[in-house]
Image (cartoon, rainbow, N blue to C red; front, side, top):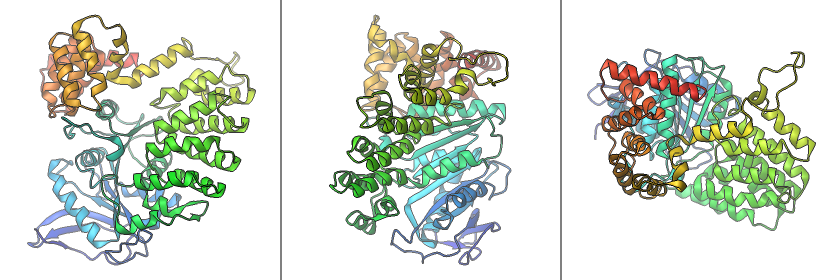
Length: 560
């Protein structure tokens, strides 16, 4: 094994440090980096989870200083009172841009950091902008045992691990937070939107935000705060708990209103311990267990169990449970969203009317960035629209105000016209539109109930297998595509491109996208045009121009 040496000492506290070099025993530079550490750190090798720290690996856009992306991470941690709990290290690319040549140097940098500082390996996160965002996403996909979560701004990635017989379990994999500023470069807009469609179809857990006020740089407190808060509540779900972390699960106690030891350990195992606390006869313990779910991301099983505390006999327990459901609904927990929706729209479900108010407020919190951004979770909007016709004036007012930017974003009281009550075309059409858009390629399965041709029936058989036996889903989809079913051609292009049910093969996927595009499939045209711009596929100028025009026309129908 190559011995790694540090060129400059980093044993003293460092803040806004200069660039350093990590070198091998022959004196060859492995990677250039910048590191910032808390003023006080436990010794390297510390195993006490309470004394360990987390690590953010930050990566810049091409042609930017090495430490460029430390600033937004540092300031977000500072605002949240967490800065003393994290080491920040920024790595420089081997060339102008990050690529596969950076995988090994970054892994060596991480290995050095784990030996040098008391870092908990279950608390390693990546943050990057542009090419730095690309390498963050790629490495989180490729090495879920090393990277707990990746935050990417302004660019995306193509390389993904194959899923053949077994699909990725999003509950036991790296998680992703993708950000796009609408004031960014136009080709960044198309790149990130296209990349999100692939990450979404991969089936991993992804939060995707678009912001009107965000441009080319990533210092943006609204998204920084949410992304960092979300990441720091996660623990690596592929690594086992340490002996010391397991011990924390055996002695949960209330500190600051929640079960601090369980939140510190985090992950699915801690979630199981929190679920046990849900059943306590002590209402204070149940309330603390509920609040713990807002302090740590504990998985879908815990969210499903938390729903029961939303109808607990204790008003305090219910309040804490609904608040935690709102936090997790914002983190895109499907179970938390379902629980909030049911409580908000179903009067018979709530113990008290105030609980419905809290649930609607929770929906407001969970949709606050989606209202003007990307509506990833149409069911929450469907619930809010349903409340517009409800009997309770308070709930109607809350729903109407949440939805105001959608139904009449330009209205002012002195504009000289009445306020619009619904968007153009009405609420049902708007809801159907965002549902179809969010479904992406899966929208083509919506007509499966009326399948008539053998090719369509074959295509539809693959839907339920995507999450269980992707190889079988791929085989059925390919068979239908070869029989000329256009949605299958588009889907098989995506499956090739992301490596789902087959080895990843972007050029082959692009061939199928072109077939589907020629038959009028706008989404396939979009993905094909982007594959020629960064996915490794090749096309003549005429083909690229035709696909680009078709993609632009399709984008207009999607409101982009």
